[in-house]
Amino acid sequence: MGYRAMKPRETALRLKRFESDEKARKVADIEMMIREFENIASDLDRQIQAEEDRTGIKDPSHFSYSTFAKSASARRDNLRSSADELKGKLDVAIKERDEAAEQLTRAATAEPRETERTSGRRRGERSSAAALR
Image 1 (cartoon, rainbow, N blue to C red):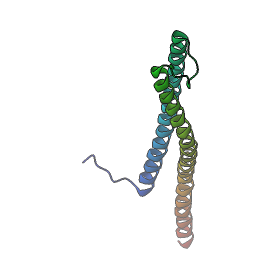
Image 2: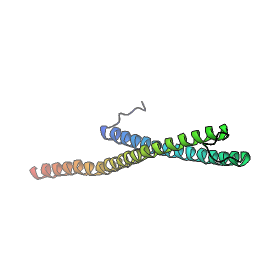
Image 3: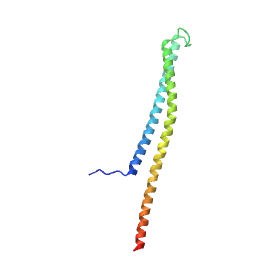
Image 4: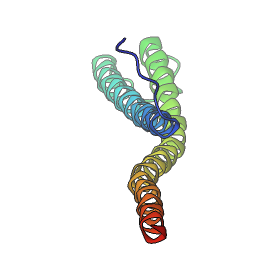
């Protein structure tokens, strides 16, 4: 009883809204991942510095350089590389999000104009019918 069929226009608008929301979530997720990677890399920088201070050896090519500092450096570099790759993906995701938002805005603002055209035709039809009487 409570079921009502959605008009094609409502369905299209709902789909555009969903797509726009998904693109915005994707941007937020990528931004969060970049922040997390950068924070972890900063933490690793501090750990590497502390290890170098503790051992007194700051040259990674030295034969006695800390294996912990070496592995932490490699991990930090991988995180920074991943963050840089994500920044490229973020640029693409932002463009897609903005395009989806623009399409949603166009679809939402096109609806009233279409309604006006339809109701204008009806008014014109009524006045034509009244003129024929």
